[in-house]
Structure formats: structure tokens, C-alpha cells
Length: 293
Image 1 (cartoon, one colour):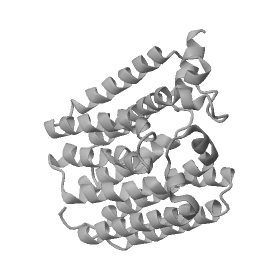
Image 2: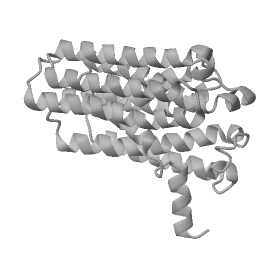
Image 3: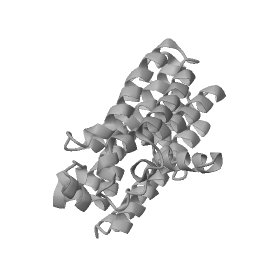
Image 4: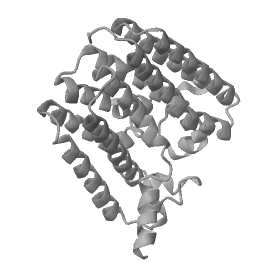
């Protein structure tokens, strides 16, 4: 395998050719970055967290495929992944993941001590998440913590503290992650039953669609409360209404429980996250919010 082919394999292994995971990790990080920076976060902070998001997501994908390599061989959708197909050896995958984690940690070292300390649980969450599917009934909740941990980190990087609003944003992200990843889990429901791993789609059973919509509602209610506590204005609440409309559209996709439609709803969640971010950014641009609680 020549260098060009090897790079292409690594791109597939890290899912850089499928950026949806990066976007779902990025949006909540940007929510926190803009709120912590009162609408004007320092450019270097934005750059560090953008690059850190790409590195951490890429490393997380490698760890996930390493952990699931025996399961993935039994699923048609995943049996051609580089690790399961033999294009990448397990030890090689571990070296790649370790290198990406080291690069992400080097970025954190350019920030303050509290952010560096928070990077440790962020790493542990990323490494341990793939294994939660073996033990937790709703591993998607754990994913929400892992995907949202950039929120307290970006507050720490800018404020040298983590106020209550950061944890409430993380709380909102947990419910959002359960919503979108349950839609994703509905795609693999039959395979998960056969293999014997857990997912929220299996846990919720025939109430899966209702559970997804309830999680969207909890996300929006929490975001509304955060905006209210910070004194956000009209633009922010218009954005939340638009996000609610997007969630309603997702209901039309998932209610039939068809694989392709559920996967489409999962992919479309980037617009939910982007809409919330746009509301935060525009509202802070035109309206000065209250101080952080």
C-alpha cells in the first residue's frame, strides 16, 4: 500500500470523509465558547477548540473501531471498515489514536491550568465511551457527556472557572445526544439485538419515537432556561423556535422507523445544533446579555 492509499485508509478510519460526528461535537462546544466569550471569544480560543474538536473526534472514531472490531465484522454496514477489513492492524490503530490524543493534549497545554486538568476527564470519556455499549442501558447519555465536555473546557479556558451555566449547557447536550443517537441506533436495532450490545433504541423499545421527542423537548426547555437566566433577547428565542421546527421535521422522518429515514434524521441534526449556535451568536451580537451566573 503506497502513501496515498495509506492516507485514504486513515481518512476513512478517522471518519474525516464523514464529518457529521465532528459537527455534532463542534456545535455544543461553540455554544459554550460564544456564551463564555460574551459573543466575542478570542480568535486563538476558537481556533484551538475547532482543531481540538477535529482531533478528538478523529481519535474517538479510531478507538471506537478498535473496541468494536469484533462486533463490526458481524454487521454488513461496518464490516468494510479499515480495522475489520484488515487494511489497518489493531496496533497501528492504537498508535494513530494515541498520536491524535497527544496532539489534542498539546493544544490544551497552551491554555490555563484548569483547562489542562479538565482535558484529563475529556480523554477518559473519549476512550471509555465505546465500551459503555456493553454495560450501560443508555450509552447515548454517556456519549452526550463525552460530546459536550468541550463546554466546561471552553469556559475554563476563557474565564478560569466553570460557572453553573456551563453545566446546564452540558445537561442540554446530554438530552440532545440521546435524541440524535437514538435515531441512529434505530438503524442498527436488529444488529444490536443479534450481537448483544446495548442502545437507547432497544431500551426505549416501542416508545423510542416518543423518547426522542421528549429528549428534544428537554434540550429546548433547558436552552430556554439558560437564555432566560442570561437575559438573552428575541433573536435567541426565534432560533429556539426554529430548532423546535427542525425537531418536528425529524419526527416526520423517524415515526415510520425506516432505516434510511432514521439515518437522515440523525445526519440532519447538524442543523439543529447550528441553529442554536446562530441564535446565541446573533443575539449576543445585537443584545448584551446579563453576566454569567
